[in-house]
Length: 632
Image 1 (spheres, one colour):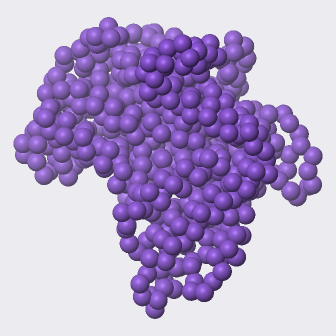
Image 2 (tube, rainbow, N blue to C red):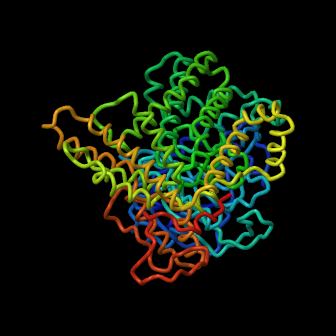
Image 3 (tube, rainbow, N blue to C red):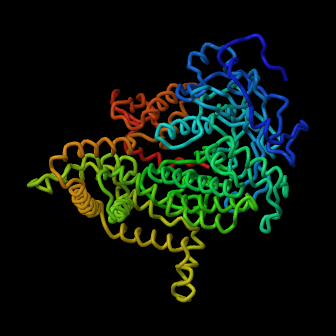
């Protein structure tokens, strides 16, 4: 494999250092095919697997800037599609695949690794720091198992757009600098329906300081008592120490410098990972983001959002929201994410083993939920514009807001954005006149009775549900025990809400929704009135409230239907919608950025009749067909 020696384009002049391959053990055997890789953190990839006629589909200017590149540096380079897809070797790069393990849906899965991603190396871009470059979808590696190492256009667009959306929202994330597609096709079954069809192979160029994850440390685990599997480097505590030293020295230098005692250093590191993870998941919860596959192999050691698969941003607020259609039991539901992150941290502690003090590690884990709640409450206060003081009752005000949102089926993103329109309480104002207009706006974001009926249908299999209901009559004691389990309790709660809905009509529902929102908005205004005791300072506080709210409540997020519109256009060869969506997502808090898709983007093949200049904006309540999108 030879690198290009003739060109001197900006891409070819990237300064690669590839520290990870110098400081960590590398499998250099070059054996073909999937295999177990003992005693190594990386495997060299000696043969590239070029795409057929690769071509650029989209670029992120802000991500490219992290490498010191401009979009013209790429657009004017005739070899750029090959370089950015792993089809041609960038000078100085050293392709490799990372070895890691993981607990998947709670069970240790043994060796996993980069089955479709290639590490190209690390680039020093001066003031922007050091960035690891990966190409995702570049072909088979020793960790591909039965896969072909390819990613298709559909999943690549979602990863490209969401990586950049999260960064623009201020949420730590890996980045996506480019999207390259090709004329190479692979067979896929997108709906797990047994029907496979050809899809275009595509590659995302990903950036991060490091892609090392919790699962990177699980390659040293011994045989698991439940799955019977073990890490490929089980018992190699020497390599574990080497990996830990590399991570702390490279990415937590202040911790390395501040501690001469190894175990003290390691405990400080573990606490920092816990804190970053708690802050990350708090930020997810506050924008309604659900990762979908929070396995330990998808948890960044740096506290970044990592590996965008069946993710989703909530439309209608539902604490039980599941973005991954394959997650039948809701292990990775929206409301479960904080506790799952804590569980994953416990698995990281087990993987680090004797490098940590067990009692101290347990105490750090015990601090996780309090740390998470502190971050969560701080962000939620900003979303409500509570900027001057903190009150003990704020947590209840937020909980009651979410309860009303859930009961009324309110849109999560749009409802929070509308709260900045709640008028500041003024002496002598008529509360009904002050509250009424904003409540009317919020009601437009609430669900209809038919939508709520669908949302509250039990998700348990009919046979299982019938058995539990029968138990209520035949064996009340057993039923009481079953009803105490979270899964059954959730189904019974759904049935209770569904029964109420079946006994009411749309008009009664709207009146109840209005009453619920009016009561909460009045409470919120009373809380706002306590933000300032000195009326002479009121004007700057009111301005700050609006500024903070509008910079913490996005107007646009990457909803599934927005991504689906872009995907369907791209599959027909039109990438303009991908780029339009990217532009909107890069400025998610703005009231002025272009949030209107072009006329005719209605997705799912449903051509709707509308006036030429009237469109469903990216910041509007989702269309009805969006509920049918299935992501696995």
